[in-house]
Image (cartoon, rainbow, N blue to C red):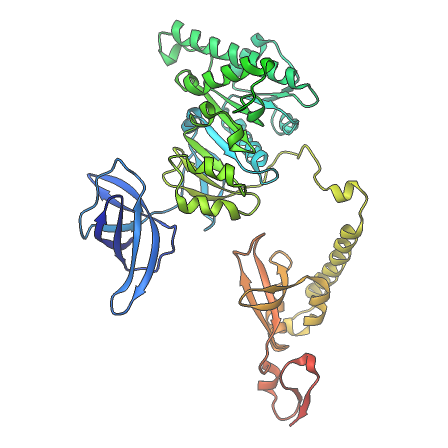
Length: 472
């Protein structure tokens, strides 16, 4: 879609006039020698008698600069591939290609933001597509993959010959390292990666680089908590060999069909030689300045996205680098595998206040659902503002004021007319953090009932809670 044209260019930034009101951070592109050159809107303002004007930044430093009056187009966010990772903020599906995973992927973010969740999603998709992989499961997060698919095998240790046999049949092998000592974890990592690297290099040599003669298929190696195996500082004698072989795989593994997925809670703690070889990244919420500084050094992340990382909601990430044409804000889909750990620590400790409240709400909702089912018209539904106020939380929402917040899955469309007659205003907010909700609040002005029956009914003027009644 045509959205504007270039008015001036200075270095790798420029100015443009737009036909649409765009937001800072949106992606646009122009054509240069038959090639799409991706740009990002950095600012936009409205000028009297001139319309929308703003600035943009060219993200590809190898592209030809645009000429004056070059057309600018809105870049669509839809990404097509084999790996279903989730959706964009606009609801468009995001399906990634497999090839970029063999040029290494960095998964970064602070604890509890969704790094392991997205790794499980990736391996569910790898199992569906029959992509062989090895998982070094440091903390026992992947033990239920074998229940998801019979092609997943969970072991604590395995002979290398058996490992190669499973990879030849395109299976996923999970090394569950939970409970092992630090030295045992690094030993297994070293043995697996060193033998795999030697076997792959030998396989390519014997096949004389003819892919039809290869005995070992391309393999993706996923290492959870990678900074344990290749730390940036303080390398101890017992994991020095492990760190060296991991750096070797990061530098040369892509040539022999070994792709790395490295998970790091703190990017500065992961060795530079490993993280610098990652050509793509999935970045979750990061608040500490040290990690954000290191992430900002990646050549494929923009300053706008670096600022957004600090406020990303849980379960959402920015995917950037070789696997996408431009940085993409993604809502990661739910996993289909059974979760390995119960993170509801209040339930483990026996704190029952929250479950009790949930049970009460559920019973009330069932009563409302029965009422809705039995009634023939929405006029007969026994739903009031006060009753909903007792069932759902009341929040102070910017712009809308104090509202009852009702998740979309609980809101009944038949409530709309009934609540409006009672003098309520209903606003649907699909982009609220945590999911789509309905906001319900009392109108300050006259209700529909007042307007419809002004002469025969006792009216309440102003706020109903003030109790000021006037008869007409």
